[in-house]
Image 1: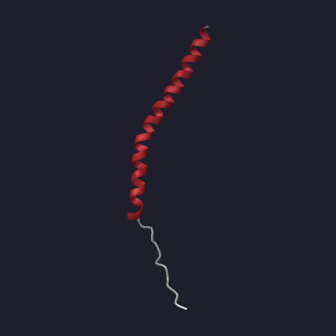
Image 2: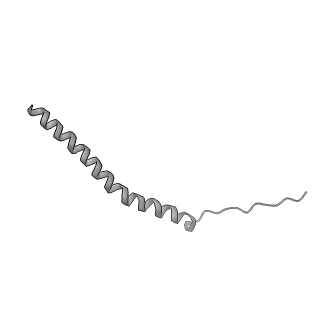
Image 3: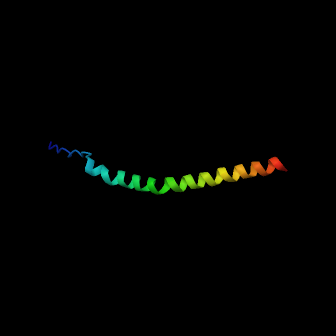
Length: 55
């Protein structure tokens, strides 16, 4: 019986670098947009509360 060994796959910094770069660039884009949307929703909720207080 002839057994062949499968070469092991090593995870190095070079193999993970494209993934971390993609995540970092995505977060750099999405976090400011998310903060702006959240601020808009909070502002709308506060304005509605202020208007209903005086009505």
